[in-house]
Image (cartoon, rainbow, N blue to C red; front, side):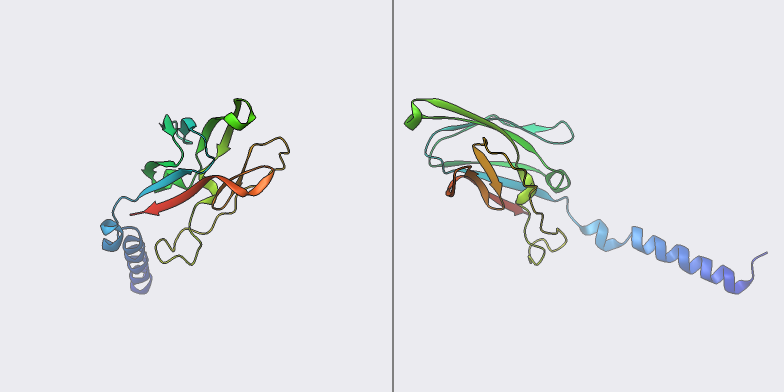
Amino acid sequence: MMNSKAALLLILAISSVALLTCSPADAAVPHRIGSVQLINAVGEKVIVPLCSGPYGDHRGPAFIDFPGSESFQFPVDIFIHGWTCSFEYVNTAEGGRKYTANVLVWKGVLPKSNSADVPEYPSLVPDYVPCYDCIWKIQRDGFYLADDKNHTVFHFIGHWK
């Protein structure tokens, strides 16, 4: 049999858990949508045949002229787990050479941890894997041609609402 002090502590503990899990503030948080805007900076029309998420959902295709952009929207919880996009473009300056790349796009676009807009999402650093024959490299603010860190192929802009 439980004494009254132990029973009171148990009730307080259960109430605290209920407050933590069923807070009215939590119920008031709207479903968050994230979006990423891909901005073509390569000077040629770029085809994005498909962007696919970790749960089988996808966006695309998109045909992005220069200058031009395309935006994708998706739930923020999917946004933070990483999407892969396939990119293609034909470089007319190289006699029509076709470039393709499959790239983890969304890993480097979250705001810094001190962002006033989304303070609960930490800054993510993209995984840098040496790839000497890659056309694109991922940086925090976009793709760069592998041989030219000043020539941006795409910029990423992340938005939340």
